[in-house]
Image 1 (cartoon, one colour):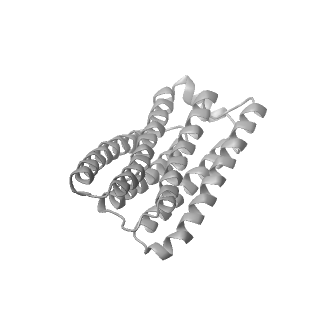
Image 2 (cartoon, rainbow, N blue to C red):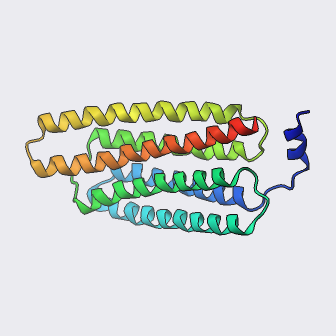
Image 3 (cartoon, rainbow, N blue to C red):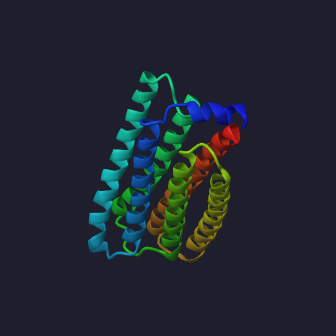
Length: 214
């Protein structure tokens, strides 16, 4: 048995950081789910979803703050402190960008939700589900095969989002006569695509942790 596996076996089970990551990732998945549902709802029904998204984003921000406090208090951590900080920060970044997209739909009074907006919210939902799954797999710090598989899938989703985003922007400039609508759609799409980029950033941290402990 490798020395690091022996050390892992005798190390005390983490009761602080992974529970916080579990909370954060489950709230992130729920947030992305609400955003996807909002883009499929009528304009009148969207406000309920937007309020829930705001609440979840705030909760994730509070979890991030708690994580930083625990890092300052705890000498023993389940993996490198800088990686814990990076993982929580990138998860919070995804949340912030999804909330920003939600806020822009609300603030710009976007009447008609385009297929491309719905598609990227669906991509983000899938990526957030994979993040939640990866963090759950990371908890045991043993077999990282599924973590690597999730990372590959998230990277693929990021490329898919870029493709949808680029085509959507091209279509808007070619077919949308109203300048204000061009601005509205471009801003919403940009926030959504940036959220997928941040999912890729989360995947990079997960991959780095898995490589270090494999």
